[in-house]
Structures are given as structure tokens and as C-alpha cells.
Length: 354
Image 1: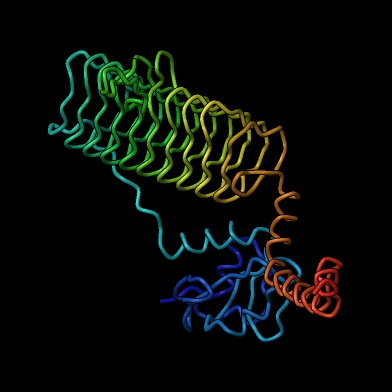
Image 2: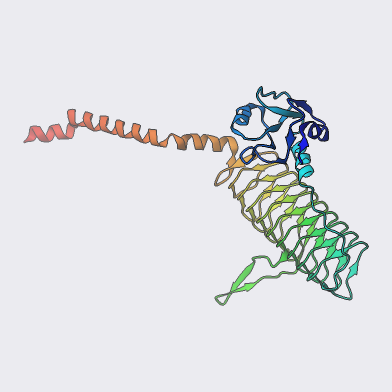
């Protein structure tokens, strides 16, 4: 049994245009939607895409009124569509299980109230876990770690010794916090591991993506500031200090002792060399290669990373290279022809002498 379009409009507090009695069975993206589905369009300038979709109805931004479709107009398209998706596919909330008898917990660990620790999790000596934390299956929390209130550690995350995780932070599956930094000294032809005496400190309301790695500091902490969100497959090296509310996208690599200000954005596959500072509210475009400090509020791109305006000029010039090459060849032919028509003075003298 489907849901009338008018009922969906009430759920999202939107304006209905079209037949409100239409039964909607599911929510889907434009490309995957079938008859009976509702989809969405988040850009009124791309209204022509609605004609290419098989969806029965659409969620659209305010002011978008396609003539041949039943739509729900809303201010926040993504927020409204998320509500509709949840209507058809309610989220699955895990039941509170308490502490599994199959978990391995040191007698010296201190566990807060209403904590869930799933089977196969290992909690080391002198670990502190705050209230309402959730430790999923296969997590390893080594000695001396401190886990704040309402923290969630997803399956197989690993926290090396003395890692600190602030309240309400989320660590996704397979993340590794506190592994040794990649630092060696070479003595007698052998690479010897340098001091690895520090740890990792994660601020409150941080989210760390799956399979991300954050190395411990050499002597002090590697720090991730409050509210920072880190995507999957990110590498942050030893001694880094990441500011508050940074956004760090997938496959970013940040070398040792780098620091960032607040609200920095790093797009996918950005690479940052060691010992540089990236200023507050700076934006680094995808695959930018950072080799020097970035000022506050600047947008950099390219390899090596330079201001976006400068990079745009370089790309424009690069795009013109094929035509410039043709022009150069034409000019060379003209020069060669002129030289053949007008021999040099040296050639004339040689001819007279003969």
C-alpha cells in the first residue's frame, strides 16, 4: 500500500502542485526512479531533467513549477527528501545490549552508565569509557585510553594506548588511531624507529571515517579539533594539529607536524607536505599538492598548489598549447621561406668570392 502524495507533502511541510491522491510506493534518485516512485530535483535550472525520469512525482525547490509533473515545493530539498526516504525506509536502531559476556574487559577498566560493549570487543587496562558509549564488535581499545560520553566506535576500530576521544565523537569501522608515526633515523645503514611516545587526542563532536589512520605524536599528542569531520581513507601523520570544524575529504594525506586553522576544507586526494600551516577557512581543491603555508581564507588548487586565480590562468594557457604549437610551426615556415629568399650577407660574400 502506497502513501498519497498529499500525505508526503504534509510530512515535509511542503506545497503540493498536482494530484495529491497519487499513491507513492518508494523514494529514489532521478536516474533510478520507476513509476510509483518519488524523486527530487535540487536545482531549478535543471528542470528539463524531470522529463527524462520515470518517477511519478518530485520534490523540488520553491519556485520550480514544472508544467507536466506533480511536485512538492520545499525550501530545503535534501532535508525534505531525507524525511521521505525515512518514511519509506525507517532507520534501524540497534537495541541496547549492555556488556556482552563475549567481550574482553580488563578488571582495571572503568565503564560508565548505559554503555554497550558488543561481542569480541577488547578493552585494555586502565581504560575509561564514558556514559552511553557504544563499542561495537571487534573493537580494540588499548591500555590507558579515555572514551568520552556518547561516543560510538564502529566494528574493528583500533585505538592504540592512551588515545583520547571526546564526547559525542564517532569513529567508523576499521579506523586506526595512535599507530606509530612514520619516523626513522638511519644509523649504520639501518633504519631505526624514532621515539613514539605520544598519543592521539580527538576533540568533541568529531567524526572519523572508515579505514582512516591518525598516527600518534612523537612526544606529545596528534590533535584533531572539535567538530572536525574526516572522510574515509584519510591519512594524518604524527604531530599534526588539525583545527576546529575542518572538513577533510577522502584520500587526503597530511604529512607530519602540519597544522591547520579552523574551518579548513580539503577536497579529495589533497596531499600536504610536512611542517606547513594551512590558515583558517582556507579551501584546497581536489588533488592539490601543498608544499608551503596557505594564508587564511585563500582557495588553492593544482600541483604545486597556488591561488585558484593563478591556477586558472595556467590551465587556460595549457589549453591553448596545441593551437600555439600550430602557430609556432606556421611562423617557423615563414621564417624559413624568408631566409631562402634572402640569403644572409655571409652567404652573399661567399658567392661573390667564388
